[in-house]
Image (cartoon, rainbow, N blue to C red; front, side):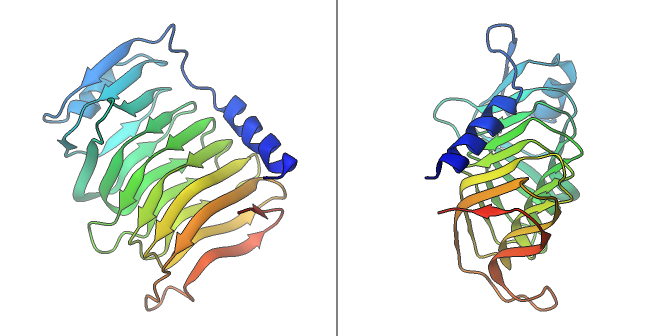
Length: 226
């Protein structure tokens, strides 16, 4: 790995302003009607939601600086049940998502727009509605880290990054497969996006352009490594 990429990754990790575990309250969440939405509502910025195994049939909006992490040994599922555009809407700075399975959005599974200091780690995204366009959407956001996550079955791209001018956005050690495009990056300024992933099995879906592993459109200064 290049020194430049190591430096970039370290920079991204430092900038992700996640809650301090020493000062954060820990809220345990278990499946039930709107259990996650209720927990987010009562949480204070900086709190940590520990999500236990099971299926959470709801769309959630993370509008506070929170950590949403899977309980040890569990892979909880957030399922928007194909009733909303987005399964998880990240609309605050300093959000961490880790160890979650996210399905059921009709357009995005995870949407991150106009925010920064966001980290998505070990997130598994799959189109279960039959027409979702993107697994994760990162738009006009930064810094953002997407690491060790997986996206499959999406009509446009497993991971989309666009409109970035105040990154960096780092996509690192993710896996995408069975998407029309593995990763789509467009309209970004120089030196804002860095990529190192495992991409396979691009699908030729009618009307959505040529299938590709990585599609760069008006993208300057993108570093593709490994």
